[in-house]
Image (tube, rainbow, N blue to C red; front, side, top):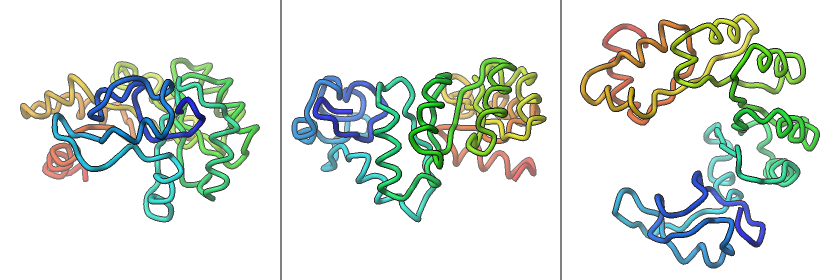
Length: 211
């Protein structure tokens, strides 16, 4: 969120990695932020950072969104109101990390919101399955917990899909033809696996009859 209260589509606290500018989003007005352009690697584009409202308008009716709002100090009521105004409360899954209080605040602000929490214990599974059974779309595990499999089984038994990722070390392995991380995820019955190299993973899974 910018210093003048505009919600924008930006994963990081700063704009250094994804634009040709530098500095934290929270210290800039939106007008100042629009002076910078998005980039891929070191190649700048003509595109500026979109507001979240603009991004929602583009996605509406076309794709289901997974929106990371964890640890960004965005008031729950502000997120809830924006999604309600856009009529997209049922088209956006909100990643909230391990913050149970934030989950509660979001649902109190808008009972139609959909949650994507990070799970660290059996107690977390019990909390979300008892408090928000219809609002928790997936439960996420760390890469290590997902590969270990104990919590994966508990989540599945509670009736929820398991989400994890191999972004980082295991993803880089796939570029070398080593799919051990992906296979481990599948063998432990994790339902959704996030990767930066979807095409490579998809080709491998099809070759092994997984897809």
